[in-house]
Length: 220
Image 1 (cartoon, rainbow, N blue to C red):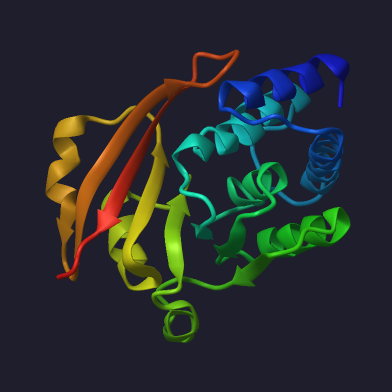
Image 2 (cartoon, rainbow, N blue to C red):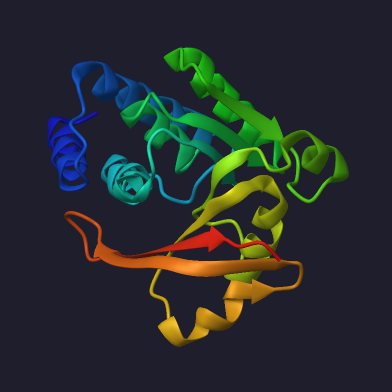
């Protein structure tokens, strides 16, 4: 990783209350190197420059960190090449992290990174959260479901409901959001939530705007 990009990563982490030690920085460097290498053969992400990966993948993933109850068991739904789950795990090793994605090549990459970095307390699952076998295995297991680029908000909330523990939290990482559109989503078919918190932010060193929405599961 170029020194200036490493500096962006460290300073950006501090903006979210995260002090990355040397071990974590080395892990991010290896992650970035492998992502770029794999991306030359397999389309894992449209973002290809080192600086853009640091800003729009790594720091974007870490932006949700201040809003995560600790310790937590987290299911990252539609995690792609591991975002936001793997960066969060690198920065906060105490998190119990499960990644799930329906694209085999992306899950293969996740498992490769987990092995290379020697991460513990994290697993990558190939499948869909609505599959019967997945629901049987993962039902009501998580404190938090997390989505960065998985689907529309209504679908994410509906699919999260059976996976969350009682009063668990579904956290959606979105772009700009019209707040008036959110309230009707707290009650979807077979699911009910309370909007606990809405956080608007701009990612460090960019103009990329984010909205983090925290929905607490309610009993139907």
